[in-house]
Image (cartoon, rainbow, N blue to C red):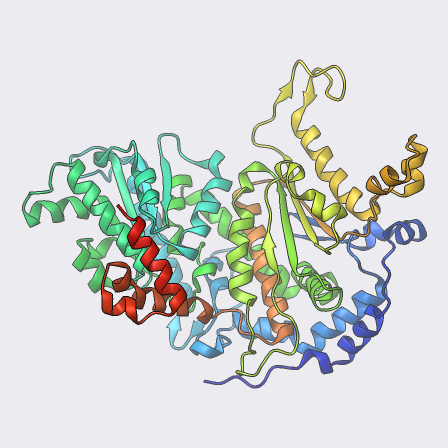
Length: 573
């Protein structure tokens, strides 16, 4: 199936208007706020529990109007409707894109979906909820202790083995929702094929109380299956079964391994009971799959009720994206601003700065979501892109980042839009009873002190500090004045939620999914394939014999690769 050619955004009236605005554009956030006391209110929006302040962005009414026109002219709303309806908008793989279906509620009173969803003859709603019910039932067995290891001991540690979307999503969600994890349960995550990863993640574990979840849709991912075999060896060795019969080994695997996969024959060949395999569908991309059975490890950790709230959070933003007018549609607005910064103001990267420690893996999760989706050089019809695409997403939690890279954002020469994310109510409210007698007074609410940094950083980026303000503080040396001057006009978005609940986390993930969608639609690219990851994998399989010492394979390499492998072989003990 080949989709019709995407709209060339550079030919639209809105794009041409933006190009005219950008020519000589000189942002003045101080002046804009002074001239418009209602600016903050005008550019602050609500999406479910998320309050999103865009007022410190480099946006004016004229810029916003032109951006919204681009969204209309490139068909963002229409393409979103096509996506959630099951049209095959993943053109290069001829697939529907239905991650939003993973969180559609059951047709029960008060939670009725807009209409039953049937795609390619498949009752999507029924299939999704059948799988969810199976995951819930298994998770409850583990949580209650009714599922035991082969020696009859209850499971205490779950080790998720996956890579890419089968790892980044679950580990991020598990870390974010640690306050909701059942006491006595721990989840660890193995992804890297580097043997150090599986070694460290199994260190100190008791094989009798450890359950492995092997997450691979095709049950053929090189890294995942290699680690799964190493985990199986570790289990057999720890249970004293290395020299046992095949039946004894298989019996142990059946009680200590389950799979998230649709390749039931391969699952069975590994030794996992196919009844303990949880499937998903080809219309779910890996980086969009955390709310599918890929999240089984987290369901075990936090339980069905919390997981249902997590899904409800996704669905709330899905509905906001579907129903909110473009001018009040938060994912669309944030995506449009990113297009403005990337295509007109020269931004090449984007910082995500969560001011809540439990979101410390959120920037890493967004790296795959954003860069694997929109790091494309051709449009969905195979033609070359007509604009720059994608942004380099990166970040660390505040306040850690303040003592690392904020210098570059504040005073560097590059334009780096930043998203600040926080919650009003921490899971652990602590007071500094002693204080330091200076900046921190006895009894200081530490979360309030933490949030003071959240508010201060976006203010400093927006408004900076003038040379006159530096001089007014008593600095007279011109060189020092220059060093202490901040230009301001560095764009940021502030997102605040009541607390980091399962629902709020789902909302945040869906927010960025739809930001990615908005950008991809405007750029005319297929945000749901990832052919760019294939070449390196193919070459690794070709090079592997040379790394193992096959001289003929080594001779067939280019001179640089050949020399590097030769040096490795020389150094390897």
